[in-house]
Amino acid sequence: MESTTNSSAKVDVYQIVTNRMIELLEAGTLPWQKPWTEPGIPMNAISKRPYRGINLWLLLSLDYERNLFLTWDQLKKIGGSVKHGEHGHVVIFWKTQKKEEADGQEKKHSLLRYYKVFNIAQCKDLPEGFVEPIEKEEHNVLKECKVIIDTMPQRPPIATKGREAFYHILEDYITMPSQRMFKTKESYYAVLFHELVHSTGHEKRLNRPSIAEMAEFGSDMYSFEELVAEMGSAYLCSFTGILNKQIMNSAAYMAGWVKKLKDDKKLIIKAAGNAQKAVDYILNYKDSESGNEVEQSEMIADK
Image (tube, rainbow, N blue to C red):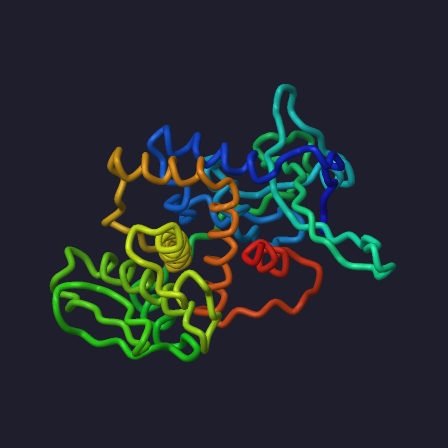
């Protein structure tokens, strides 16, 4: 990974990330509902690899004109520097270490660490032509939504009936109201994406405990699964270029998530990792490179 890690074992990375999310929620912003349509998905400016899991939402929340980031080492290598007064932004990863157990056997342990990146707007003396101009491509967003749904591996059946949208875990199918009952087609697909993310938790797909164990409404496990589905749906909405017109942003809703994050500092990182795995499954995305953020996001999901 292109990073310089923070070596202090005393730093609570979970708390750093959770505090940032709480800060955004208390300011009236839903971190997982930040679209990347205009500034682009956050990615490394040199490798062009998108940031994933919680890193995606951390960097999206910064509201830069372009979502291109560099590590300090990368910036030095290309002859650039950081503007006076600018500070780096936290990006997390897992570091694997070997430790000798009492029985003399070596065992691998995964430790959550972080490094810092700088947006190109925070940098100066970048090589000429380093930042490529934005190319706006015209595309049919609703057609892309349909393609995602049609090509999802092992997709559950989708029944159109009733007035409520839900995923039935026991019989493995999704029920959706008719598109005519939604104010916009975009809203219809945003809700359907939410239910598709739920369906990835089935035992024959990702076997996610938060859906497989059928947690009761209002329980911690139920809330966790809803957060996974919200984050996964938001990702797919941005991926296709649609905006969810039915975003819940009431004060009570925000306060509810603030409380849950304060009660469990690992919640947001775990949910983001699971949401990324769900999205990867729906998009049938497999990364061919080892030791990258794809694997790290999956590790995060399991911690």
